[in-house]
Image (cartoon, rainbow, N blue to C red; front, side, top):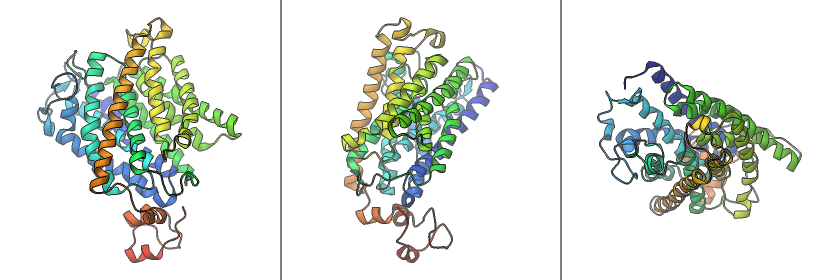
Length: 431
């Protein structure tokens, strides 16, 4: 096929929108974190941009989208170093445009995990984890879910034929399961749950949610890989489900606690964005309302599971991304309509249980693979270079002890970098 300039322009713009989501995530997580660890929290997202970008060019794109080596499990190495992509066409796009778009998905998937281990992860340990996890977990799973090749691509996409338009399994279930595994590797924060850690900057949380919401239109509508009617329905459904989920979350808060909070609205919006990701090109706008209401309400309750389960998921990655990703993936089996999909239908539209079964297999496969491999990778990192900072460093604040910086100056001096002598003199950063 020939290159379509309209499609190319849209996907280049969508790629930039998806990249913006990772700084948005940094603000979202940074606002939810404690004041003494906000810079480290944000740096975990920003360093993911750097590391995953290099891995993608070296071999990540080839493992995810190279020709299948058999059984739909992994791409080959024929595109290492982006070899052979400079003058190739993927559909109506230059292949480099398609590759750039998919790169942004890889970046944010890795960054999402970081919220579960706020306040206590060694920065060097996180960097090594990013390298190993992207290589062993994300790139293969991206091949499973996103590599379409007329029956010769990824096993979930081309053989099982489960529906995941923009990454409910490959991104959110994947990252959520990994986040849960890392909470077991790193353990609980000092004094948790007696001191659960309140969000230190709610305006940051709202700013981050706004950037995520804005960028998510590239994430979902861009996954049509063209400027067409499919991108239009994905765009509308993204807006509708997100609005519904935000309202559902604060509705639950109001009934349960008597207050509708700004953090709740922002968290509900993210839950809606997560749930509509796999289903935005499977349901109609009325279905998107249902997706949002279910996800917003369910995730509002799910974030409290960690107290009953005893795992310290600092910023509720499990409660929002794992639970939201599961809901969004499974609800396709109920609400998918052929007026949007052009074929497969869910149970409520007369399609029976077949599609729901396929969705469940995809969720279990991706979630199980990610959880088990993350446990192995986390164990390796912990036993080699170490994955958790010391108790003293955690109490003092990871920003000071790891980065020699603080986000806020409480001494009347300038904000920013300072010498080790300054760090020794400044012990009173607000928790």
